[in-house]
Image (cartoon, rainbow, N blue to C red; front, side):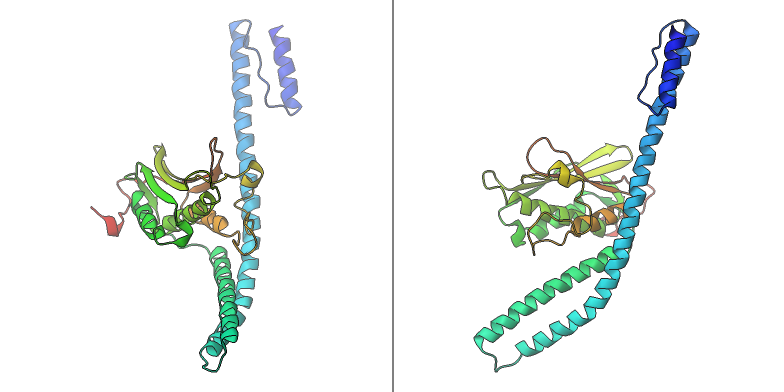
Length: 297
């Protein structure tokens, strides 16, 4: 009977089912054989999951590379005419014969054109690889600078931003890129937190050890959260849930690329409570890594 049960399990695996487990019953030799079979199917499941993950990452990399090439071309072709338009508008604004209405119209035109320039700049940032200088840096150092910076940012007005956890943990990362990623996450979180009127607006930056090799920086907000269907797409280039004119959909895509350039990851996590959680994980520094010159000793 144990041999027939094992034979059925082998047949199911041959048919493509890897979730089969053979019963480890019967004589010792057959029980050991069944356990070895179960170990084999578990290993196959792990390898299959890894292959799926690698295939998805490869497809994503190919899509991002294609978008990057298009973005670089568009940014180059659009950037020069935009610079000329901005120059012409500024020249007109410098004239003394303009009426109030004309001056107001030109000022609005200049603001919108400069906004397009900002988007073009983001496209260029997205299309070119980041220069990484990975050094040993305390996680709390770039975050402290971010908190100080956001105190004067109108997008964070009325939002309590707090650093919690083990800020003394050391990363092997580029501090300027860490600051860029976390600042983008904090600004997104602050805007989301301000959307909810029935609770205090809050963004929490938590630093903790994932394991002996990696450190996590989580940015948690008190906003409405990220639905599962949106969570799967938040890192796609140009995907945004904000209204027209309020977001380009490039911030998270660029941030994820920066995280990967430092051998890290950036993901949107499920959250049981209210709000969204984004986790940046980075390699943990060791004693032999070069120190941050600004915070040495």
